[in-house]
Image (cartoon, helix red, strand yellow):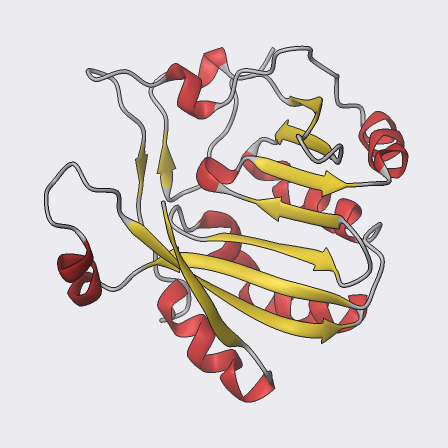
Length: 205
């Protein structure tokens, strides 16, 4: 079995403890939540296949770290959580989303600090790539995703170990920002502002 491959902006201490595959759980609101580990070289392929199942019209969402100036005001001690700024771009057909995704694909996939995804305006149906590039699908129509995972050859686990499960005080993970073609993740909201991207909220990391 090959060792799990991480993206450029992420380091985990024990990649050999991570298996590719997915896990299914029900949320408190009775939605289906699917968590998946996808090796770096397959993220683009898998994300594209899964998002193609989302019912349009939909929204593009990104979460990026709050700027350092605001973070200093928000955090009163080193024990306080860091924060992330959430941006949306609404009303997208799938082809419109994929045009944007392909424009920023290398940043979205390989930057360790950005979370991103696409979700439907019609009910609960969204595919997100979150912290440490762990896939998170929230849906009321899980069968289409389960069939796609099976078609792509991924195994189902009852208790899937994700990156954070391997961390310890002596062996933490790390996330870092990278630059692609002169651009950083912080440039994305400004570049997409004229196309309708807007700041929505600030959340704890």
